[in-house]
Image (cartoon, rainbow, N blue to C red; front, side, top):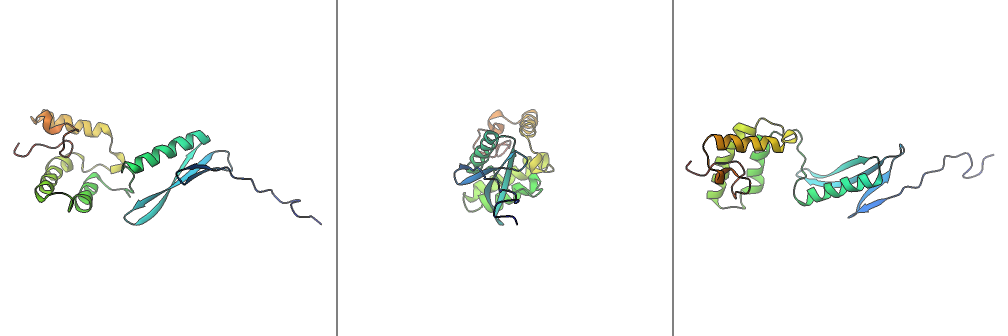
Length: 162
């Protein structure tokens, strides 16, 4: 007869890494895993981060949480840039800015951003795509003031009336 604890596989004790109530734990294969929550329009979603070391996972988790604080985390579900911009105008901009500002944003999205970037998957959008948009607008004769990213207008759009 086998007594308690004999012949049974002992359960490994998990080691947790906490980063603002988020957790990382050791996996059976020796790697590390961390999970954190993302809040989308459909509700709460859990994201998972994997790494070979505890430090690597902690670093990735800190970056993910930082991006989340900066508003960079979203659930794209295969959205194109066009679909995202339309949703952004409808859900985030409308009601938070003056009507004329909303019209200027819609104009910029419709005439400048969507024709150049609209076909791309949002996940595939890179800084190089945006830089290419800036360059093409400068080559088209728009002023640097209108196309630079620090402009208070949507990045890469023309000035009204040009």
